[in-house]
Length: 238
Image (cartoon, rainbow, N blue to C red; front, side):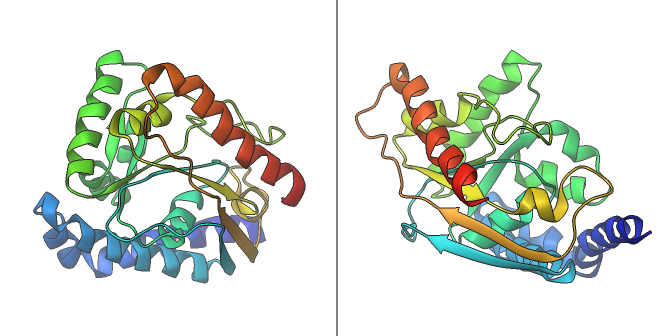
């Protein structure tokens, strides 16, 4: 019964601020140039949810992102709370690149499809369109966030293989990759229904990996370097 109510409570926390601040949210997405204002509201939304779920987040910076600089943020993906923890982890406005299926979620999906870069992983044309939309956002001074596992792995997998898209984008636009490790999200709120509960939620922002001078042929190596940083942290600290 606890886990049933806990899951229901999560969706109430997700929906409530959206309903209350719906007019303000609508205004903030009317123009793409107003996205930073939407991002600030989204960070408050994320903090509201994490606090309401009893999650105490702690962000450990091994390097701090510079203000007004674009980055490629990447992290392991194990929980519905990953989006919220990512939002509270950095003040640099970023745009999520995520699967289009999430746009079907009532209320949340309305804003998701209007503020994020959606991708259909079964469509080559959709994957190519991501590069063009990401380029436009980067030119606006924003950052990009991708969960490179491409989905949520099975519970017994510490870290799944990474897709190349995030690293190819970072190289094409010569922006630093910021590896991030979410250490507790699987324990706090995984996709296994009868699991989880309040407690600590740690994120580690690792030293950035520069892409200046790299070419597309370096994509696989960059992928491997970033994954090894996150995997090592999960194996030793999670």
